[in-house]
Image (tube, one colour):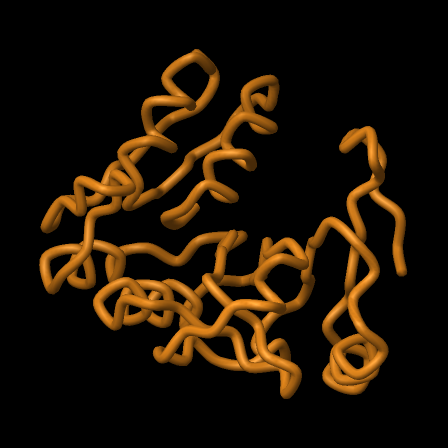
Length: 166
């Protein structure tokens, strides 16, 4: 689980899950998951970004290189109409790309507010992800790109308990 409020929401959703090993560079995610006695939490070191509790920098990159995770759950600051997944901080993107390089499954968690935002640092494209979980049906162009690239799209149902495939 990476940095951001969406990752924190995912952490809250994992509170009842058993047998988890969660590797994160997000102090807030670690603090949320402390409430799950069944979760083992591995927190990366690095430079603390006080604004969001994220740990970034070369120390963090070196740390995440040690792992090959089953599932990388990645947030984004922006998602453009060409399918580029973007962020504001190049230090965070380096960490995300390192994790994605060895993850067995990659999930993008990005709500549709990210479609109206712009950021300068490119994580990659939707093609790099196995699944995109969002809060509303994406525009047709992005749905087509995701389908062409083999990226499944799940729209979280309004009650947030049962997803529906778009």
